Image (cartoon, rainbow, N blue to C red; front, side, top):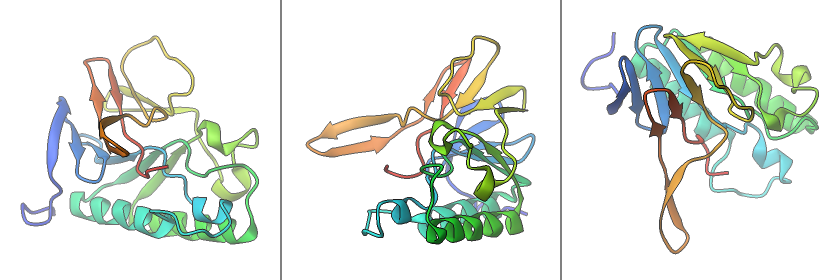
Length: 185
């Protein structure tokens, strides 16, 4: 049971839908934690350089929020991986990350444009083009939808603060919610 002590900060975006700390979205009715543009294994794809983030902190953010919210499911809104061609190291890191998430809650994967034509099936397993949760269509956002209400990622919304600094933000209306990228990529 979530207590006020360990519950993440949250801000209502629509009825039963909340932006929560860490750039994640919480769907209260279905107890679904939503993350966009996670780019698991990116540090391996760029040759092991030391980026500002890596797979482990991203997974830790998801696990901490899922546990604090008592999530029944974690939905990744596309761009789960960076590309369809992955080194063995990247495949291993991604498989381990997904296993850790699956140990915490049911995990649903929505394919994005970074999964490539193969949609990363070899490392990800089954993916969806879209899902419906709490009467909202969940999709990556690289293809338009004109029907109903949608929750998407893909756009990496942020507000520019000056110089090189920007901050990820949620965009929300009565028909569209855009979730910021979990990672700064």
